[in-house]
Image 1 (cartoon, rainbow, N blue to C red):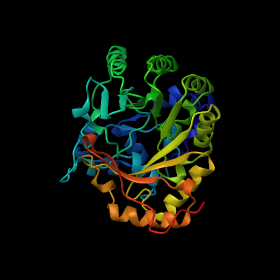
Image 2 (image 1 turned 30 degrees about the horizontal axis):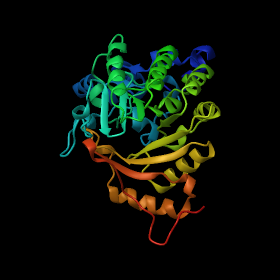
Image 3 (image 1 turned 90 degrees about the vertical axis):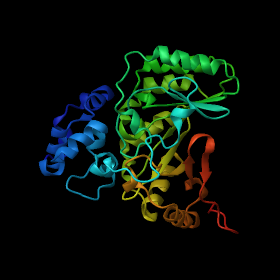
Image 4 (image 1 turned 60 degrees about the vertical axis):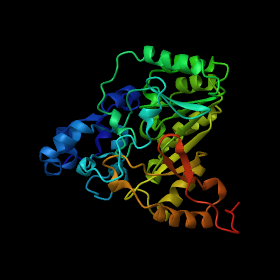
Length: 349
C-alpha cells in the first residue's frame, strides 16, 4: 500500500504551486487502489461510484491523511464510500431546492436581499458530504463569462439585492484575473453593498492564498470569507498561515463547519476545533446539521445528538468559540436555529 509520505519526493516549488496541486487533485480508481489497497476498491460498485461521484483530493490534503487508520476523520471526508450509492427516504440530490430558485442560470436566490452566484465549475477537493454533488458530473464549461454576465445583468436590475455570495464549485479555484474581473463587476453595481466568498481553499489548498490574491481581495472590500474547517487536524501551520494572510488584509474569516458522524460528532473534537479556530482568529460561525443529500446518510447524526454536544459546549466554552447550530431548510425556508442558550445561562465571557 502506498504511504502518504510522498511530499519528500516532490520539489518544493511544485508543492507550493497551487496550480500544480489543483492539476493533481483528480484521482482515478487505479490511483486510489495504490493508496487504499486493491481489495478496498475492487468490484464494479467502485466504477459506478467514481463515475457518479468523482474523487478529488489535493496532494496537500492527502498528506494529512493517516494510512491504515480506518477511523481517520480526514479520510472519511474525502475518500469515496460505496454507501454514497445508497439512497434513503427523505434524501434528495438537491436537498435545498436550489434548482427551483434560479432566476437565471448559475444564480440562486433563496432570500430576498441576497443571492448566491455559482462562480466556478470545480472545487480543489470533493467533500463526500457536499450538498451540490449533483453538479460534479456536469462538464466544465469553457468560458463562463457569458453566463456570469447574464447573472450580473440580473443582479444589476434587481435593487433588492444588497449582498452577493460567490460559491460554486469554489471561486478561489479561478485565476486571479478572472476573480478580479468578477469581484470588480459586482462592486460596480451600486446597490451591492457586501460581497462574500464561500471557499474551502484555505483548508484544503492553502498555497492558493498568495499575497497577489490577497491584494485583489483587499481591493474589493467589504468582503467576507467563509471557509469550512471540520476537524482540529485541519488546523495546520499552512492553513493557519493562509487564514492569517487574508485576515491581515482586513478581510474577516469565519468557519461554517458541518456536523459529521465519525468525523466530529464528539464533544472533545468540536471543543478542540472551535477553540483552535479562535486561536487563529477564525470565527466559528455555523455548525450545520448535515443536509439530506442523496447517499450521505452515513454522515448524518440526529439533531438530538448535536444538541447534547452543544449543551456541553455552551457550558464550557467562551462565547467567541460558540457557533450557531443550524439546519438549512429547502427553498425559501432558510436556516433554523437548533440550539439556544439554556434558561438562565450564558456562555463564559
